[in-house]
Amino acid sequence: MEEVIVERPQAAVAVVRLNRPEARNALSQSVRQRLAEHFHALGRDEDIRCIVLTGGDKVFAAGADIRAMVDATPIDILLLNNQRMWQAIASCAKPVIAAVNGFALGGGCELAMHADIIVAGEGAKFGQPEIRVGIIPGAGGTQRLARAVGKFKAFKMLLTGEPVSAQEAADMGLVSEVVADDRVQARALELATTIAAMPPLAVAQIKEVLLAGQDASLETALMLERKAFQLLFASQDKKEGMQAFLDKRAAHFTGA
Image (cartoon, rainbow, N blue to C red):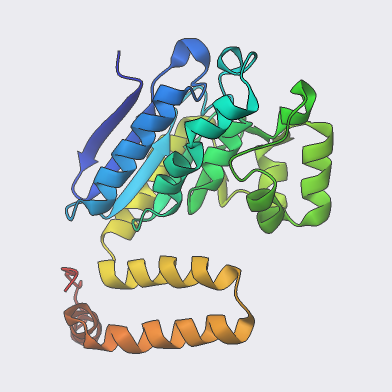
């Protein structure tokens, strides 16, 4: 059975679905490898404009595969080079929407935080429980979490290992939107469809500038924004979008 499935439910939208229900979508080495391969491919696919990442309607991902780690040595972990697999998702040029039902724990929470938008079901749970098995998050869980929710909320989650509800996650800035559990997948696709209809060059520039600016000074980040703003005035999509606005019609963006 394929552990990671790629679907194309409609034009310009891809769905990457974890498919290990018997293990609550635990992130084994083979799953991480397949995720990297799919995100590399989709990032280069000109027909895809937005990606939905999900574990399905029951569980997102309940962390790493502890059985595969219990006897691992530091050198074993070093040689896995897992950061390269995670980087395939982090560096994907296409917008990524995480559709989260059920548990997003440990590596599952880190995986969700690699997305640009997180849609969570009311029953979803987010947490970094690594401390309870004697380790710490190793795929951005300390750094991305602190940047998303701030020092004090991050410390509470990391030092206790206790999960938070979807609404708590939304209140602290970890989740973009909370919907009924049975609406998560549909809502993620709605957002993906909306984004896929936007001008691809502007979408790409927004993602690039926002992420690069987070760790830059405000002055540098504003400079990056100005340059991207100026660059888009050379695009055909800018001409199409503005003319469509004046003509009171729907715009058709081609990415040129």
